[in-house]
Image 1 (cartoon, rainbow, N blue to C red):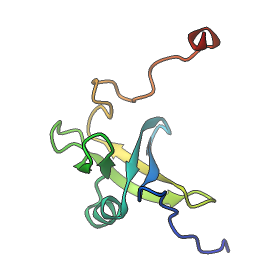
Image 2: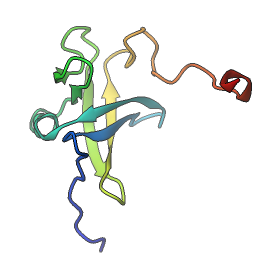
Image 3: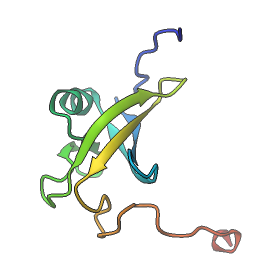
Image 4: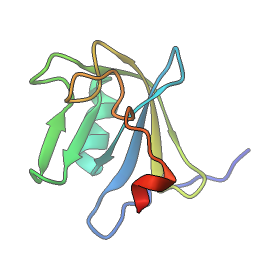
Amino acid sequence: MPEKLEVAFDEKGLVAAIAQDVQSGEVLMLAYMDKEALRRTLASGQAWFYSRSRQELWHKGATSGHFLNVRSLALDCDGDAILLKVEPTGPACHTGNRSCFFTPLTAEALG
């Protein structure tokens, strides 16, 4: 049985949170959670995050209607990242794309 880990929040009180489609396995987005966002996610079954740019809690889908219904959460081996397996109700990205990871990155792009 694995040892019990605690969430390793960083110096700003945040932890990386990766949302993955539970059906397809596609990575949908990366965001950050503070303790309150994690507590609300666990209590509600929908993803909550902490917006670093707005410095406030953010209920994913509250504005767009594109919620992430959480089916499971897992902590990585170091305790510094959370994987949320979700059923999305629409595009995860604010651009309207299904996933936030749609821009190819090449060696040429680095210059």
